[in-house]
Image (cartoon, rainbow, N blue to C red; front, top):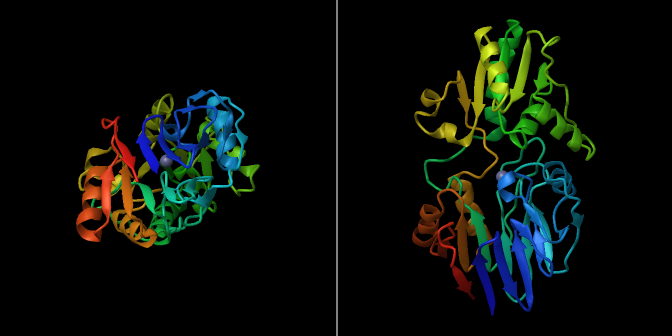
Length: 322
Ligand SMILES: [Zn+2]
């Protein structure tokens, strides 16, 4: 008998071992797995420093949590590319029952990440951030070509642009995809890129310099915190702005935000990609997490004919025996 339980990440007990996906607290005597280095997936408490993760994730745990995780392996755990951000991984736990935990994932190939590929399993635990039919993303290369055209035009006229992106993930994608443009980066993004340079990624780490940076330039920043003032000043001088988010598919996103352009660039699967992934894994049971977990579980049951159940935070007592 095996058991899946929500709480301190997601735990899976089988054949006398306990595996834990994306724990908040890493405990001894468990196999801890960290899927990627976004804050909502990172541990914040360390009773043990041993975890299964990629070398990139290990370095970001060090940078963000100041903890030296020791990468361990386990004969029942296989790491698979998740395609979400640099260093992101899915975990396949093998045994009498096989369990695939996706973490955040993307099946579109991008500059720094290969596409996540489905894998046959008995139980699938999948994210469902964009688990509603209206979220279908355009081809990644095509949308990046549109972005490049927009920026080429600005730069050709000696203008400047501010691109709002998460400091880890989309910022690296933009740094790589737009490498032929005069990029300057927020210091946090430059620092992330320096960490990744050590892993062989070809990423610029040139920072915005308040005294030296003159148009034309393309500034990548989250725009948050102390940078909000700089962004306002640059906008007053005529800088164009763009947001990069899957939510740009929502009608009203551009209208409600204060940017000139919004591009539907995401590090996640769209609805169609989530559905295709589930089908190809051909699991007996699917658990959905994050975003539209309820709606996507309903779609899996109704349209794919596979048993599915959402794992949402308020269901702290959810147990599944199989
Ligand atoms: Zn993430």
